[in-house]
View 1 (cartoon, rainbow, N blue to C red):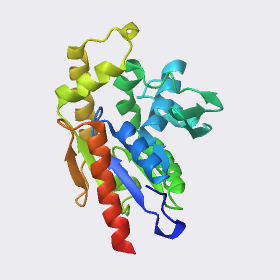
View 2: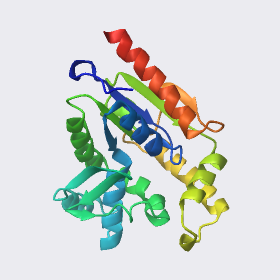
View 3: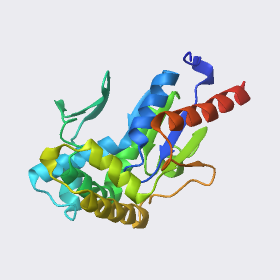
View 4: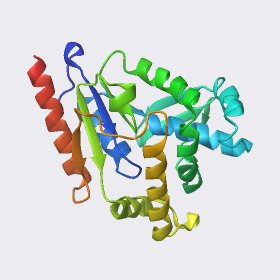
Length: 231
């Protein structure tokens, strides 16, 4: 598939709970369309990693915001996906640890931190041609996105996917991952600021029984229909 022209580019929002495969799918869709991929979850993970490193609790929101205001987060396209730079340091290998995964929702509940990162995410999408994934893209960050997808899967399936991604060195059991993901779902759904929810005009994809390629192909078909309809 060829990349779209400048005038017919659209923005694509992909939301869903932890472990639904959003990042992998969004990156593949972006590559196919020759669009820019924005992993918003990586931005929150980078903040979380730094705060944990500095020993700053999510409950100390004033200190979190003080440090976050001076942070520079860059998302750099890379042949193996995307590099995440925090103040010039490549933190990509660190932000997917189970420790960060278990804490990121708590930092993401800080309202002023979300406001700061959402503003940055919206700037990235101004020129169109962006595939952005997260928890609140279709509802809060890009409510006018031309294509909105809500990806989900069973807790058991999402835990299994996460288990297969982790190294043996992390020593996390499948049962613990199921518990962690269920807890994270609850935190994401119950937070006061931009909770995880499906936009009214989003297409819901239950990927429990789908391969990654099947999910990508399904989303691409929706995108092509949307672009053809706007011509």
